[in-house]
Structures are given as structure tokens and as C-alpha cells.
Image (cartoon, rainbow, N blue to C red; front, side, top):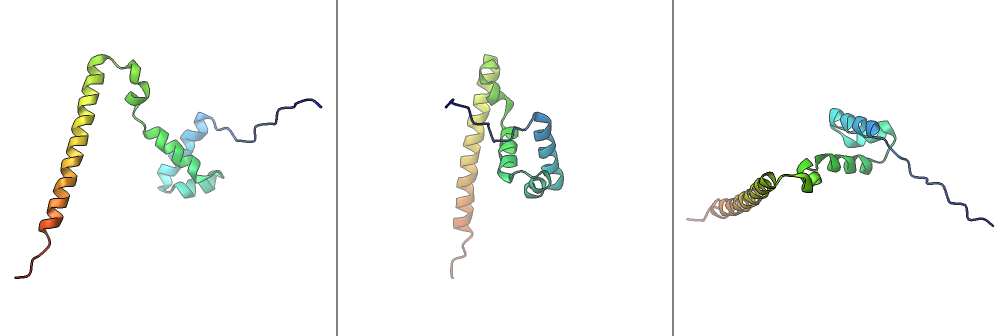
Length: 102
């Protein structure tokens, strides 16, 4: 008996379909509704949304010139530091906002 490869049962979506699905999800403000309208799994749209949010610079990584890559690293470090400071300040506010009995 010959080894016949099994057909790939996964549906393939082209870029135009993906773009339309993302537009529909954004327009309707509901990924679930868009998925039902297109008869696809909502997880698929969530994956496409996540991929669309990936920064271009991170995707191109090696294509960045050294000055831009350095600046990008500095900005990301600054953003992390500011996020940590914000979390600290939120905790301090929570501690001091508790009213003490007199």
C-alpha cells in the first residue's frame, strides 16, 4: 500500500481575510461577535490581534541601525523603571489611605 500523505485539514487564511477580521472585531468592539460572523474560532482572532500589536522594531530587530536600537533599549528600560515606580506609589497610597482609629 502506498503512503499517501493526508490532506491538511486546517483552514488557511490570507492576509486580506485576517485584516478584514481584525477590522470587524475592532469595529464591532467584540471579538466574539466578529468570530461568529466569520464562522471562525475567537482564539484565532485573538492571536491575530496579538500579532498585530507586536512592535515593528522588535520584529525587525537586526534591521535597526545601532543608534535606533540603543535608543529603543533606553526607552524600554525607562518604561520598566517608571512602571515599577508607579506600582510602588500605588502600594504607598493604599497603605496611607487606610484610616486609623483615633
